[in-house]
Amino acid sequence: MEITRRLAVALFIACIPIFLIATNVRWVISAPILYSYGFDKYDIPRRTGIERHELLSAGRQIRDYFSNGEEYLTVSVVRFGQPVPGLYNSREVLHMKDVKFLVKGVYRLQEISGTYLLLFAAVGLWFRRRSFLPQLGYYSVLGAAITLAVVALAGLASIVGFDQVFLAFHQIIFTNDLWQLDPRTDMLLIMFPQGFFLDATLWIAGSTILEALIVVTASAALMGKERRGSALLAVRRLVGVAGSEPTGLA
Image 1: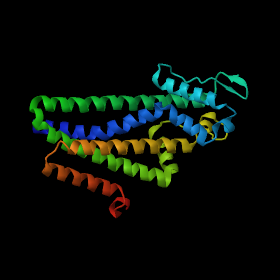
Image 2 (image 1 turned 120 degrees about the horizontal axis):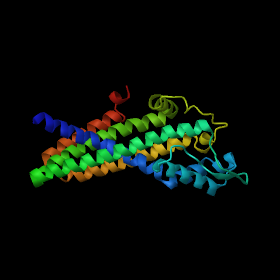
Image 3 (image 1 turned 90 degrees about the vertical axis):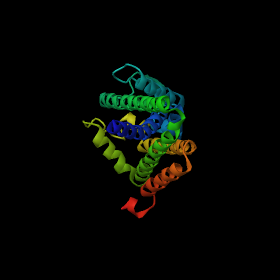
Image 4 (image 1 turned 180 degrees about the horizontal axis):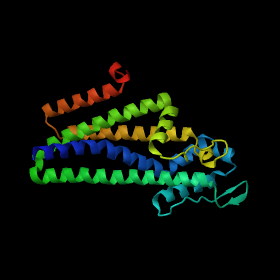
C-alpha cells in the first residue's frame, strides 16, 4: 500500500512538468499570432513570393491538418499571382505526416497527464478532505520546481547552441531522414526558418516558467509554514542547479 502511494505521488509530481510543457506546446502550435509574427519577422512574403494573407491561410491549413483526420497535408495558396494547389513536395508532405504523429502524441500526453492530476487531487480530497491540501500543495510545488529546472536547462541550451539542440532533437525523434530538407529550395523551410522554431521554443519556455511560478505561489498558500519552507527550499535548489551555479554548468 505504501509503495502504491509513493508511486502515485511520484507520478503526480512528474505529470506537472509534462502537463505544463505539453499545454504550452499545444498552445504555440495552435496560436495564429506565432505564424503572423514569424512571417513578418523573417520577411517570408519576400522570400517566398506569397502574399502575407496567403501565408496566413497556409498557416491556418497547417494548424487544421494537425487536428483533422487527413493523412497527408495539402496546402493551397496563390504564389506570384498563380494558384498553387500543392505548395509542398512529396518529401515535405511525408515529413509533415511524421510531424503530425508527434504533435498528436504531445496532445495525448497533455490530456492524459492533466486527467491524472485532476484524479489524484480529487481522490485525495475525497478521502482526506481539507487535511489533504497541505500535501497537495507540497507535491505541486515539487512538480513546479522540477518544471522550472527542466525548462531553465532547455532554455539555456537553446540560447547557447540552438543549432545543436535542434539537430539532436530531429536525430532522436525521427526514424528517417525526411526532415533533412534544403532551406534554399524546399518551401517548408523557407516559410519556417530555424529562427521561427527558436522563437517558438522561447515562447514555450517563457509561458511554462510563468505558469510554474503561479503553481508555486498558489500551492504555497495551501501549506503550513514548516512544509512551505522545505518546499520553497527545494525550488531554490533545483532552479539553482539549472541556473548559474557552477555545479549546474559543469
